[in-house]
Image (cartoon, rainbow, N blue to C red):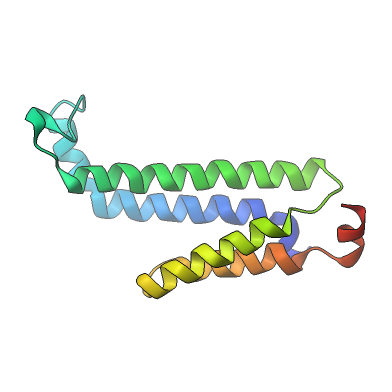
Length: 129
């Protein structure tokens, strides 16, 4: 089986890994939010808590990667067409930017996934698209 054919599930796995790290590292922050009653716990009393905002967006990002991965996999499973190469190049571009700004991160996973999307489909798959 070609990895390309499960590239959507690979993105889901990246999202799960991302959120697992976020939950492990952000657990104390999430606990503080629960202790404050959750409702408006990022900006209680008009005071912005950037750590709380960051963990919210960190977890939301991972969740949306899982959703996009599911959509990509549904496309691959139900369509005869390969994923658009532009999507792969976008993953590569974002991965490169993040790798430059934050070298010790999961950015290399996005570069690898992007290259898989760009070059993973066979020529016959590309012709059918």
